[in-house]
Length: 228
Image (tube, rainbow, N blue to C red; front, side):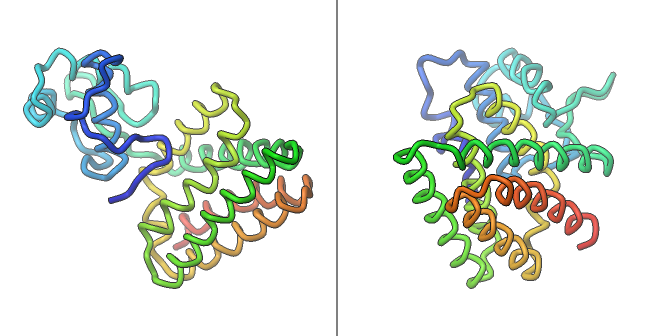
């Protein structure tokens, strides 16, 4: 099962007492969308979700309303709420933003203090090793998961809550279209080489090279998606 670095493993059965029921339902719907159990274009039926999660329709309605700002769901007049299907223009814009955000994140990562930098490099290296093994095995799911975790390391080390929220929102929206992009061996190989170049630039503290590698990686990923 695919795991996201910002989504906890427990399902609704393992409730967080500090969260309202609507918040718990929201997190569970989000998890189901990201795991592909609820797909792009699919209608989010309040009665079906309430039955599936064993709750009333009220917290489901609140949860769906709170999910709309994430860009993952969209409300259609007289039709209901649906998992969003991105247009080519939206995908282009999101990838452009991803490149800019990644570039900023790695620029700051290059300037971390010695202790924080060493910890980041270690964690990036671990994810890169997983990506290498996954590529050798042709394991798209494992590769994609490590890919997400690799970038998440460079973003969360900034400790900028708003930046992290924006990055997470963009990455989640792109997930609706990008996971299949790595199913082809050639795409995974190209992606791995790009991550290796990015890792080397961060490790060496080469700010210019790291920024360029991050931006180029996003641009090339978009091209691979547009021309599989």
